[in-house]
Length: 261
Ligand code: NAI
Image (cartoon, rainbow, N blue to C red; front, side, top):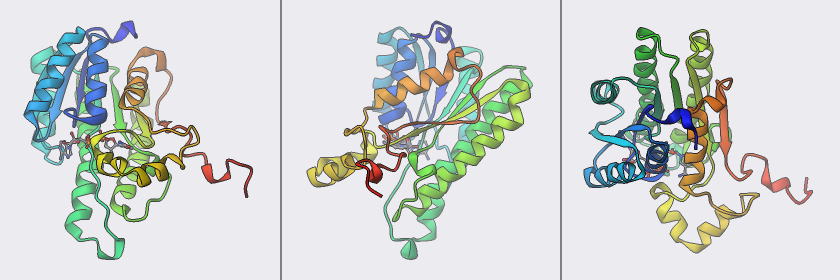
């Protein structure tokens, strides 16, 4: 538990499922006030809200598409209207779809870039604008991926979006460090969420993914939520501009593990 998170106002995009949901519930356990943004599944968002309340936190749900500027502004405004301020903005919403690069339609490229990269930019911009205008030493956490450093065939749009998030976060961290506004990334490896449900339901594909993880298992969303609360708390007060990989060692060249090479 991080006592300084009690009563803090945290907005999380894409929070009706997967990592967003796990983070929202964990912040609820920390007795924070959580703005749960969802894209289309209101019922699931409502369930997340109830779980946060059951855990001792407060919550409000808000529909919004992170690719739309007005919707993202509305997420920040909802935090201020409902809970009086914003302390932590978590830009988590994201998507992927596999397509061979030479056949990738422009609409697929644009959709992934707009959601993963532009959505995170809009969320960062709106939160930082609020922090600057109100003299708040706020916090921004962006959901990157191991694919901000590992190339990923069939997912060129996704890898480009997460590579973009890396330098976006580093740039924002540098620009706003004098105001003590911190901006960091989380870089998950393979985690058990709906984005991977189909792949992990197939035992062959699951085993293949596990073989790329030195620690030997697919991570759980709660293991990412644990990173998020640390980055949001004052325990990480001197940390800005990093990607904290939580990946069971996936970024550490696992093919060399047995002394090969
Ligand atoms: P998920 O599919 O459960 O969550 C993604 C969420 O984003 C969904 O709730 C979806 O409705 C929402 N979303 C999609 N487009 C949106 C839009 N335009 N506006 C608002 N919300 C939108 O999958 P997961 O795993 O929880 O993904 C969360 C983030 O974590 C994504 O950014 C993903 O790239 C990242 N990530 C996930 C990894 C994994 O293994 N699960 C690994 C590395 C990164």
